[in-house]
Image (cartoon, rainbow, N blue to C red; front, side, top):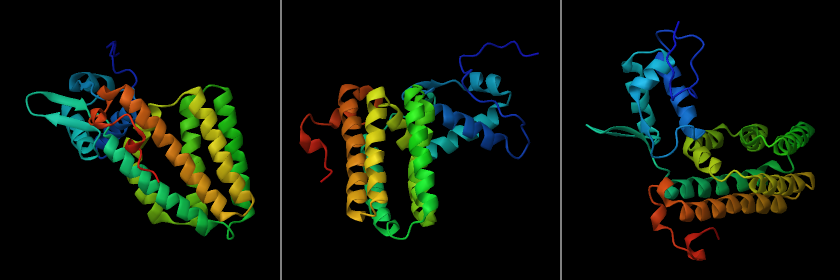
Length: 249
């Protein structure tokens, strides 16, 4: 019986550890901890504690950290150990600008060719968003928020667009979680409703404009947070205090 008490109790121990999947499972567990901020930006990573918590040897943990370094989530310094990487606001800005362009144009293609199943799926998603916000369940809301955008991609069948967005999701999700507040949840619901209203009205320009406004609003809040908490960001100190820091036009 394992009586070890670990400060890494938030890690999800895989139900089964097979030889071929150990490294992938350990990587998924650590990635989830980083993205959900259980392992916050800048924190040291204790390999011994992770091994004890997950019941694995050091090799898959080292391999997992190397994979996460490639993803930009972990920094590995010889003789100094591993740390959770700070969020790079420049990367987040780039990812969000890519999303704004892709998602707003995707709506232009979608509207006029969508069917009732899309409307029903978005109706259900909006109801789920409100329920999560009323229940003060920020983590559930975050996943429902992601699903709102995924519903649109699935309806389009544009797998390449979704792949591009997903490739940036880990670092983007980490940054967005930093600004989750009851106020942000309420604003997100209103912004999503504006997008949905454009779809319901079959007004491509309205829906596209609402999508762009939604993404801009999230970025403005994130930049404001970065100015107040530069220690969380690798480049937070480079942000100015004026509107020129928000190139969204």
